[in-house]
Amino acid sequence: MTGKRLTPMDAMFLYGETPQTMMHVGGLLPFAMAPDAPADFLRHLMQEIKTTAPVYAPWNLKLKTPGFLLNPAHQWIVDPDFDIEYHVRRSALPHPGDERELGILVSRLHSHPLDLTRPPWELHLIEGLAGNRFALYVKFHHALVDGYSAMQLLVRSMSENPDSREEVLFFSLPPRRRTEPAPPKAASSPLADIGAVLGRAVSLTKSVPELAASLVKLQLRRDGDLKHLVSSYEAPHSVLNARIGRNRRFATQQYEVARLAAVGKAAGATLNDVVLAICGGGLRRFLSESNQIGDKSLIAFLPVNVRPKGDAGGGNAVGAILATLGTDVADPIERLHVISRSTRKAKGQLTNLPMESILAYSAMLMAPAATQVFAAMTGMKTPMPFTFNLCVSNVPGPRHPLYFRGARLEANYPLSIPIHGMALNITCQSYAGTLNFGFIGDRDALPHLQRLAVYTGDALAELESALGLAGPADVATPEPPKKPPAKRTPAAKPAAAKQAAAKPAAAKRTPARRASSTTPKQS
Figure (cartoon, rainbow, N blue to C red):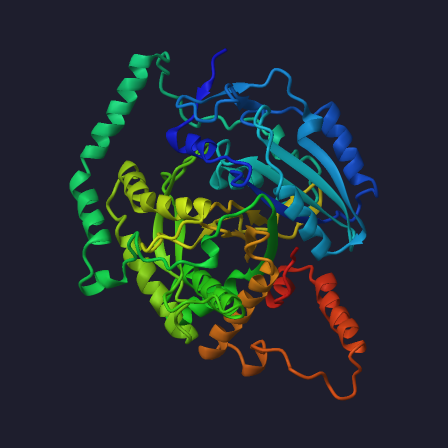
């Protein structure tokens, strides 16, 4: 049976698969039901999927040798016994389900490994949400599809027209046809494979001088502006570098892009820098509460998409840079400036390098991280600094509201991968003028992850206030009051607090309302 060979980068996600470090990613997509949708909309959709929905590649592909994950020559083959009812399932919350219950369900679903003897993906249709809403939760192995390709499929599977009722789910989308004729495909053979490898090697050697200069600047030089460049040996030891278990916690947050961009414009920074700054501010407070913040700043690993413009996706093509999060800086504006200088120098390292060289540079940059993974897995302490403490990534998405058979997509919250030595992963996806944050972490290492989502909102408000973009009244109080109001009994206060927290969550439907709130959808 012929198959499609995995690229070395795709295969790396299979080599890293363990019962604790599951290499699947996912997304939570809440929808507002179409006004004319029947009460049993999801039941009808499930029946349609079971009886008539086609399934195209890559969603009908499975590993040829699932029992040998260290196979150096993995291949995808078509599953002759594909069972759509295994991959697509209905789930329900006790009606009316709230955002917290949704977060708990998704946390549990994301904590289960994919069956690698089948095509490695699942889709859950979740009903029972309050306010005539439902959600889709999808997860797939990173070796099968990367985040960029998944976003492209998401856009294709929906419509900008709220009156359309013809949309099909992502697995029923046929592969895109090339606009230009594809070059003749040579017969697969060991000799042809060796020739392809040698061709890539020749391409790589053309940029060796630039690649070598970038690596010298990264690891050895610290003069002038290069002092702002983060090397592979600067991350402090942190609770975020713990050994992880199988179970996950998931929290979300959503902000208006215009709000973040206004902060960036006022401070002379990019939107991505603002994202890092509010994550850094949130982490500073989050870790300080348990006396786990150190004197050195946390370091973030930032994935960089290196696909050529117009690439249709389908595999993994991701580089990497390192940047400070400024968690050692109390002033919010200075923290943003520190981050901006760091990311600017890191991105400059990749300038003028071809894709192959960027991937080689990234591999060398991240190689020392094996030390922190080993330390986390064994519990052994090492005097050497680590390479990074967490991952923060930003995936661009559609700019206009999307609809699936009239149901409006409210948000797109990503779920990514924690690993041993990196118990927290923060991924953002833009959608219709909003930026949607997905915080995924180890359940035991980060028992109150939802607080971090709240604290990023506080950090954003502090930045706005410091830059004169918001009044002091808009900044959340850093510390809760030590004493309850005199006229309230201790028993009444928790009930009142719960009611106050529940009302905004139930009312938050539009992106603007979601972005202005600091109450996350969480587990």
